[in-house]
Structure formats: structure tokens, C-alpha cells
Length: 320
Ligand SMILES: [Zn+2]
Image (cartoon, rainbow, N blue to C red; front, side, top):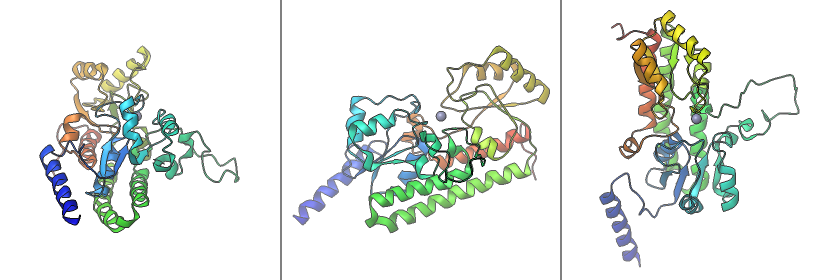
């Protein structure tokens, strides 16, 4: 029996090696599903070779408006752990959880971070206290764009995985620590960039989910779109304001979420000779980058590099 077991494990290992990193369909490991790329990347780093992690929403697909297929429902049913963000972020999740009865293995990460307002609940935990005391949450589902929530989000993913498989706690904690330190270092870099750079306004031309970041760092900006629902086109008056700002401020860059590029961004870039820079949000990734195992950390580092350029509003940075 023992020999048979190790032989089948060997076969699994060989199959995984042959099919490559992008395709782990054959895995016998318990599966973690996530709705967002960044939580997928967190979970993958923490789970290591103990669990199989899958991005539930297909690469490149908009998480907000996603509608799970019958096949997706089958996948979700086999989920050992399902990490989702909030009913504001994934309005299709509550129904999926209810119809499959997977409440027990699902973790609502906004709730884990006490952001209950994102699930239609009370704005804060201590609602008996002092109603005058207003928290200015505006139900922005992209809370992770605020660097103050990034590490708590990562920790919530770590704790969810440990709760699912406490026997491997030490293994998960060791993995988590490595990733967490890098995440912390990138956040510190961003803080230093903001603290030491001039504050030219940043211009956004694609789907806009960067508000929480900009507010946290108190950065000036102009955005063509009000949100990442790019079906809601800007008004002519608003576009005129944007064009005026580009000219008055002499802006040379325009940021675009690479997963939500727009025709208007391209037009503005052409009209004013702007350079288009990516600003990743972590919702999703295209298939090619996902298969190449591009990490969320890589994306954040790239964001920092371009943030530095745009705050200076210079084609190249002055060398020190
Ligand atoms: Zn979004």
C-alpha cells in the first residue's frame, strides 16, 4: 500500500512537471479559489506546494460583472477555500455561496477586515457608540488600493489558509513572512517616493479604481472616468476640464489600467503627445502574464517606478 501511494504521488509530480505551471488541472491537492488576481498571488505564495490555487474568474475578465457558468459552479463546489472580497466587489458571490451551500469554506475578506459597509452592513463594529462619529467610507470596493489595508488583507489570506489546514501552520507562516516582507518594502518605497517627490497632478485615462491610493497619499489627480465601469462615458464638459488641465499643467503622462484601457486615453495621448503608463490594480491579469507567473509584487514595483516619473512630470529622472 505504501509503495503504491508513493508511486502515484510520483506520477502526479511527473504530470505536473509535464503540463507546466499554467495548467495544474491534474492536481490532487485541495483547491483555493480567489476572485481577484492579488488574492490569488497572495494565496499562491502562502500555500506553496500544500494547496492548489486557482483564479476563479478567468484571466482578463472583469470581476465586477462576472457571471459564473455551470462549469464554474462545479469548480466552486469542490473548493476547499473560497476567498472573495465583498458583495460590493463581487455582487454575484452571495448567490453562488447560497446555491452551493459553501458558506463554511468561503471567506469574505472585507468582513475579515471589518469593512462591513462593503457588504451592506454597519459602517463600523461599535455601532452602539456615538453616532456623531462618522467614518468617511464611501463604499469603494477597491479598499486594497489603500496601502493601509494591503498588509491586513494579506494577513487575512494567511489566517484563512491556516484555519483551513492548521497542521501546516508553520509552513504557511514561513512562506507568508517572505512575501509579506517584500510587500512591506514596496509600500515603504511608495511612501518614500511620495514624501520626496514634487506633486504634479496624476492623470488617469482608463477605468479608475485608484481613488483609495490617491486619498491615502493625498495626491492631486485628474481622472477621465469616475470609476472602473468604463461604460459610463465622461460628459463633454468633464472632458473639456481634463483637456484644459493637461495643457495648463503641462502634463506628459497618462495612466491607464492595462486591463481597462479606453479609446479616450489613446486619443488624449495622441492629441497632447502624452506617454501612456500602466497602473496595475490587481483585479486580474491577462492570460499570458498569468501563465508566466507575473507576481502582484512585480506589478506594484512597476507602479512605484511610474509613480515616481509622473510625480516629477519629467521624461527621465534627474540623476542623484
Ligand atoms: Zn474594480
